[in-house]
Image (tube, rainbow, N blue to C red; front, side, top):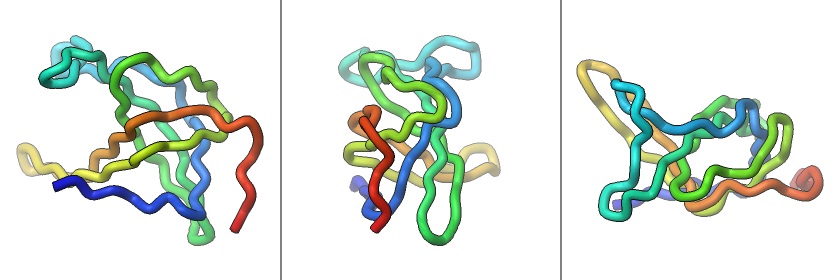
Length: 106
């Protein structure tokens, strides 16, 4: 099951440039089945209740975004994980693209 995040009313700003998503040996991860490279981009999600820094994984071409840019996340998916006594939420988007201007607040 895929759980998608409703991003209505949330603005996303790039906090750290996209980097290869790597495994514990430092090797870039690739998508199972397709072999396409995976990328991790740190963004700040901001709404009326405050902000949160999240890392968003994308697959394929490296997102062409810069620190400080407002971005759009298409099909943002949240997935809970637990490993070796640690747990959290992983985020993945179908795409992460720059917006041409600051989004309007609703």
